[in-house]
Image (cartoon, rainbow, N blue to C red):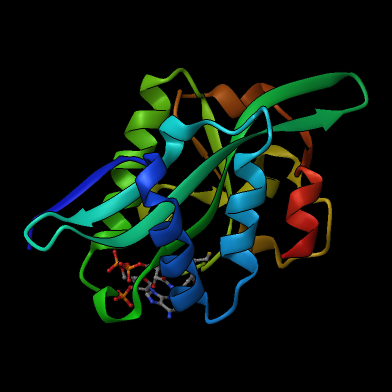
Length: 174
Ligand SMILES: CC(C)(COP(=O)(O)OP(=O)(O)OC[C@H]1O[C@@H](n2cnc3c(N)ncnc32)[C@H](O)[C@@H]1OP(=O)(O)O)[C@@H](O)C(=O)NCCC(=O)NCCS
């Protein structure tokens, strides 16, 4: 199976919703992407699809959405890795890992310096994510410490960062 990871195009929009609906078994994440796409901060170059090229089938999607980490006297630009999804019948074939790895490289190449994720504690650490609390970075709502993670794309970038992650209101519905 040859999988290519590339930025979304307009003709991918419906398939991205379908992949999310099937992976999560609910419409909230697909709708979140539709709503975030309408915001000015949305970066289509970091809304990536995984395509099975032999069958021209969209099998996965990952979004890196620009957000901020704020404290009383500072504000840092970062990215939220959310949501990500692979069609159920294509899971555990390393497609998710390929989307994360190539997505992180694309994000770094576009000048981003760090990424935040709230998610599976047995999945994201394999890419270098560590509990965000290590850097004094907190989630705006209650989560388990290990599940709220951060990754430096530029070494030591997060050493000068602390505060609370601010998600856009569109995330409230998920
Ligand atoms: C999480 C997900 C994107 C991973 O994609 P993938 O292509 O299956 O991932 P890979 O094959 O690269 O890696 C497999 C790893 O993903 C994790 N994983 C896969 N399916 C999982 C599931 N249903 N629950 C928890 N972890 C899962 C496991 O850590 C697995 O590692 P293992 O095989 O060593 O146990 C995919 O399983 C998915 O779409 N899940 C449903 C939606 C979801 O939970 N999204 C993430 C929100 S944080």
